[in-house]
Amino acid sequence: MKILKLGIIGAGFIARFQAQAVSQIRNVKITGVYSRTAASAEQFAKLCKELEVGDCRVCQSVAELTQHVDAVAIFSPNFTRVSIVEEIVDTVKKGAHLKGLICEKPLARNLIEARKLLSLIDEIGLPTAYFENQLFMKLIRAQMQQLRPQQEQMGPLLLTRCSEEHGGPHEPWFWDPTQQGGGVLSDMGCHSIAVGWYALTPHDQPLDFLQPVSVSCDCALLKWGAPKWRKQLLDKFGIDYGKIPAEDFTTGIITYKNPVNGRLAKAQFTNSWMFEKQGLRLFMDGMGPGYAFEINTLNSSLQVFVGDAAADAVADSESALEKSTASRGLLSVQHNEADLYGYTDELKEAAAAFLAGQNGFLPWRYGYEITKLVMAAYMADEQKKTIDLTDVQVQTALENYIPLIQQGKGREVLYQ
View 1 (cartoon, rainbow, N blue to C red):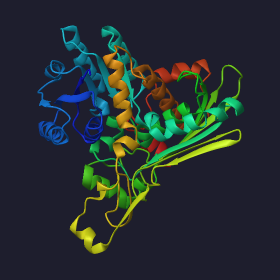
View 2 (view 1 turned 180 degrees about the horizontal axis):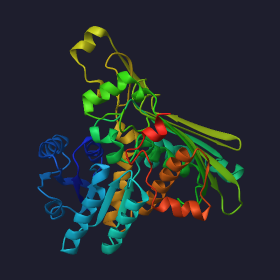
View 3 (view 1 turned 30 degrees about the vertical axis):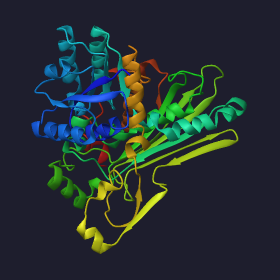
View 4 (view 1 turned 180 degrees about the vertical axis):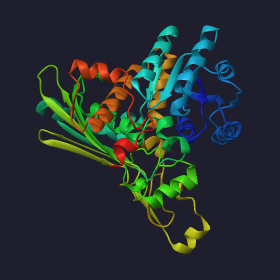
């Protein structure tokens, strides 16, 4: 069995989650890590040893990392993506042998950066994989397989509604719209937009078969714009939403056109950093002619109850569920979140593709298309109108568009 030696750039939350996924895959080993924060890299290497996912070497540079791995996964913050890929391309040109590059969602903060990344990759011709885990969720794949006969007889889905919601990110840079690229729309809207498009697509057609024709969107700063919560954000992360706010709620609709029969389908996305239930919730449903599906990751077959006395003894709220905001009461428990959310299957697929010399199921060019839809959603919110994606002037404007929120000017659109 061929083994893919994987190198990790970035040693934060998502990297640790992905390490748990690697522990469930036979042909991937983590053999190196590089992080701007040395302590984080050391902790990550220790975690890899505990999980028995490989002899993870702590590297002092991107160049050193590329000498000890077959493929590199970029899990570093969004604002580092271009510079990181520039370093990787330089090392490959100097002789580093890599089989592929992985980039965690979102591919880039805007289309300017996304084009730069694609241009850099074209210089060295490496296979790529864009990591959008929700398209690999077993629940999504199972409903598509189960409803395949209905789709063939009655026609594909006509409406999807997808959401990802939790109480807010872990790290300061996620809250800073100039570093992250925006707020919850940039952070999690890309998930919901991608999985909605995917679920609508007929099973025998490519990912980009349905053509996006229009986008509407509404962004708002609700919970984290209130004085009490602004202060908490400032005290905990040093981010002042009185000065550089980002949206903590967004909802919108993307309309797609079937190029063969001209029929329209719609995908609604809703995302928030103000979800106050058990923890992270992914909710997806779809309606077709005479059939439907629904997914809710908080509907667990395992629940536990923790009383006040016991909760005071153990206060790790995320031991039961990612982004959990409670450590007591009736708690939903997911015993294998890495698999539930699709991380194991996206890694497994990427490894098989790279070992075969191919792009992953979702190449970086797909990530570019998702970035374009996220930018169109921000534009729709700013202009307070539905954006016509078939308009040549709109297409041209999107190429160099940077949302006001991403520029640090969120007060102009969020504080009315």
